[in-house]
Image (cartoon, rainbow, N blue to C red; front, side, top):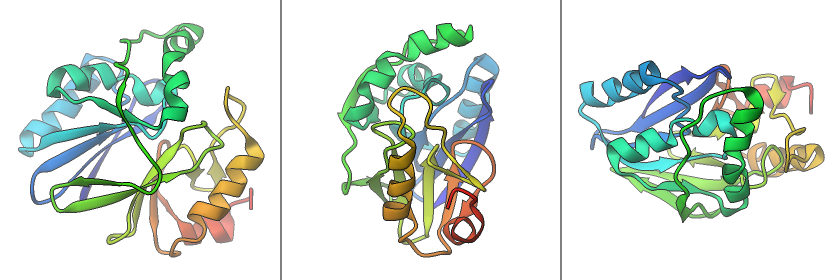
Length: 210
């Protein structure tokens, strides 16, 4: 599995394209905010001969969904999201207004992401793990074979996701990280929604929240 990270929008959010030798690709948390960022994403897909097959959101906060409509229009992909974050998605327009930002209304989710099920594309499988606390329906995607997590805003290098937004719960986030992520092998690499990647082992040893 190969991974390409883009850092988009005023919130410096990490958008990911993951793909393998089949050239099938997933687009996760498209945060592209303007036409230049949309072009950067599309040019990478075209220049590598990729075929996007699924559009996934780890959660529905505004910085992770700016590009949902663009991806839906360009590649005809329905949005996939955990159902507990459907209300967060519906509130995205209000969130954008609060920050004074433009927002192309995201399509509604067409498919629910369910904990324990697998996202399959090409020759790759990702397990869906529900890790609420930052957002009620927050999920991460775990490639067990290659020890990689696409983690959204749950666990950062030396930090955790903020919990002061609607639906956030600080203690729940700490408990869920311990229960769902810190039980994984220490050499699992976490690619978060903001900032640089980290590992489970590094956070077990150095994260000040634990």
